[in-house]
Image 1 (cartoon, rainbow, N blue to C red):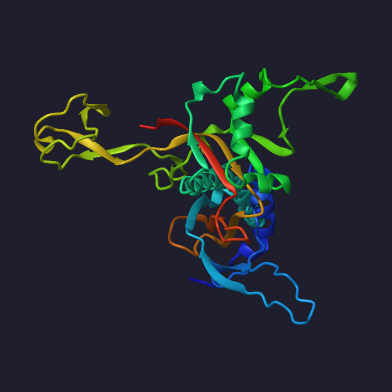
Image 2 (tube, rainbow, N blue to C red; image 1 turned 180 degrees about the horizontal axis):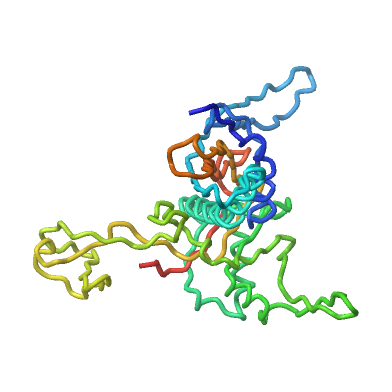
Length: 358
């Protein structure tokens, strides 16, 4: 096969700009990392001791600092290729067609997947931390309590510290944003804006709470705490609950067993006998939960993208068919770094619905 140029370096800045402008997570996207290899970069963690009382008779108190260079590896490794029949492409404009494919792919596929990856990774990290995650039925949110609930979330753990620095962002599902608009806890303020031809626009959306930006996640299919990125049709989807035949030879107290009818699984109210011979099933992998509220700090939470390879093969330069072959491989991942004081993670929060996808 003839030598083929890797267009990643040429088009990466423009593609990353589209990702930044079009995504919900632009405050968290960073490319300012020092890559050690194709998928690994360094992050420096540092902590220091504090002041001690000065002795006027001379001498200084020597402090202690600890600096550790920690390697982080980007694990979300994705690729795609498209074959465009040569009759569909003007050969004099083939390069432009490749660029259009890249831009369209980023806008319609990569951006939503980046949002989904970010929300699920941050939620997973928050769920590991005591005091930084809750579960609430959506019906428990009302116009009479939604503001208080968000304020309480903003006060979880050490989040107040980041709020005081103006370094927090809140994301909410659409139903909660609607309740905020209707909140009986807030004094209503209608903002009038001048629009074209002398018209007046009315803005009632809540955009900040105590100075913290609030974003509505309208595309609700990206706002879950876990996703399946390995579907047969590509792309991503909220993780569904999966089941397996039980291997238990006797009923385990407190364990939920299910029976299967077609594609539907139903919990057994009073399981008896030998589950392995009673056609009982049990949960193999729990499904995802819809996120109600997610909070993160751009100071410590980073989405790191890297377009690694973009190739374009002319007809005859490959064996995949009679057309132009476009290939794109990219890495990305989300990292929640510890604070610089005691090297603990304390800057994320998530509240999920209690119901799982099944």
